[in-house]
Each structure stands twice: as structure tokens, then as C-alpha cells.
Length: 185
Image: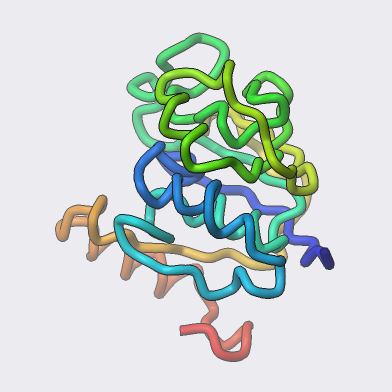
């Protein structure tokens, strides 16, 4: 599979790698069975691509070569364990272990995934996607080592209160050059 080469720094209160819902199941049991050139237009909604899993779908399409998750907001609320954020599901990591610091999406049989709710001991991948290095840290520990080539500011209406629209518009007007990338809206 040809890789796009994007190194993504995702600053958010959520990892957006999936929550174990129907969209997550669709990705791991159906979409990954498709050849890479057929994955670019997945179904969307609660049982497909959504605001809570779009980074896993981008990885499935080979668009991300490296992912850094910078936990923004009140990070203490997301640290279920002192060694990892609570919203990282082992299902998307190499050997089903978040500690590997490598995302390796597995193609799974639908029945296997249903039986593994809460655990990964019984999962046997039918295939594995190429590895993607992964790191995470909290916002006050993060410092970019070089300037970014591109910054994308996303608004998720399901998760962002309308009161934040003013802040979004202010950031957009001050820091985002929409003419820098052709077709950017």
C-alpha cells in the first residue's frame, strides 16, 4: 500500500481512534477486508466513519505514517490509568497492547470481535495493517520540535458547545490561512 507520509499531531480531549461502537466494528471487520484502494469512501454515521473514529479510518487508508496524541483540556479526566489515557482501545494496537506505542489495525472476524468485548485475549487477526508509530502526552508537556507544514482546525458539532463557535472563528481568522492550501474551506 502506498503511504501518504503524514505525521499527525492530534491535539484534542479525545484520541478519535474509535470507542468500540458499531463504527469501530465496521472498520475492523468489514472495511479492512477491502483492498486499500477501495477504502477511501467508507459508510458514515453511527455505524461507520464518525467524529470519534476518523483517525483510525485515516490510518486504514494509509494517510498517516505517525501519530502523536496531545491530550488537551482537562487531561486528568481522561487518565484512567497513570500510564495511558483511558480512551485508547487495545484493539488497534500491535499485539493488542497500548504499551507497544504502535498502531497496527487488525482485520477481525465479526464474531471474534463481538466475543471480545472487554478483552482481547481471544482475538486472532486475519491480517494486520502496516505499523504506525504512536505517542501520547498531555498538553503542558508538548513542544513541537519544528514548525508544522499544515494546521487543520476542526469543529465537531456533536462534541463542541455552540458557545465555542466564537473562539473557533477567532482562531480561524487569526491563525488559519485558507488560501495556503488549494481547495481548503
